[in-house]
Image 1 (cartoon, rainbow, N blue to C red):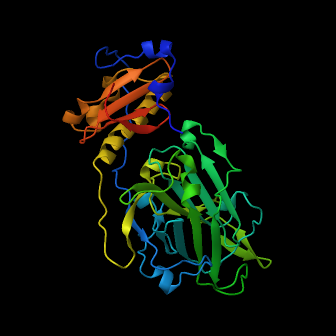
Image 2: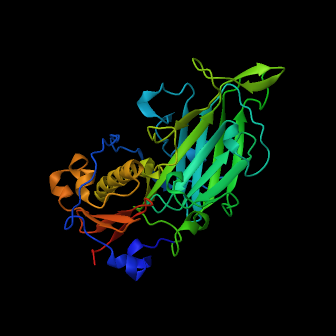
Image 3: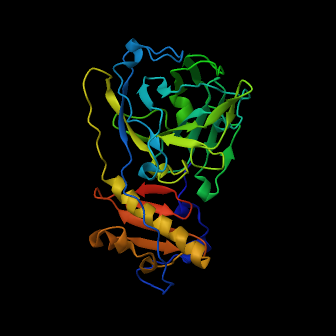
Length: 374
């Protein structure tokens, strides 16, 4: 589904391409926003140790050998207090697809929405985000509440980049189940938790990548999880939303596996890395391998952020690297290898990775690789 700008641009636009290193122009001085350290969580996804029955119960035979993710944190990271209820998730796979499990501590399990593809986060919910292409485009979202009511959708790119959002998109072949350790919608008792199991076929995950059927061992997908939690009190025998402590307006907590630093989960470049292992869970340990090209992509992503700031300040994209001050986001030896190509309304910035692959990013945030710059 991906097409590079160079492959699709009309000839007239191609003739307008200019390398800013050869034709610098002056621009306004802009104070660019600092970016957080790039440190997404990582996870190694093993083969399922036993057939998994999708019943919402994290039974020992199926899941005990499968590692937990780190505990969820607030979406804004250390700027906010740690969640007051624990949330963790697990992942496994087989030849047919990928399995997800989550355990959510919760003293009062409630849910109201019953219509498929409703906006599920108006209830407490659990959410899965998948970007199998690791390019921030063509990603998938799944939300489910304690009633098992769910919402699945496809996004062509993040909201910041004006995506196509398909609410009627379906995870074909997906199965899910909920188990409640307590009672649903009963304010008269105290519950312990609710748990979730989800199975998504590889064929459904890789609808977004033409010609791809399933991942290879060692491949890394981008994944995030989110838990939406509303503060409530009981009125007339029902749970009613109220402001969280110390605030006046009603809003939700957002607890996630990979924090983004802001209340916006739709930043796929900050989601966690999930590496597919060619081992059965519990039969050995596969180390997570940090790939050097991810740092290259992050340098480009920072320049993409700066281009958006430049556009907001001037009404156009910068047509030269000096205006973006790349030496502030990467070492001088790396900054010297950057190139920028522009038209009046588009740009492409390139940077070689250590293995010789050339990575590219363009104005809609897509990042992709070529073997050379020709």
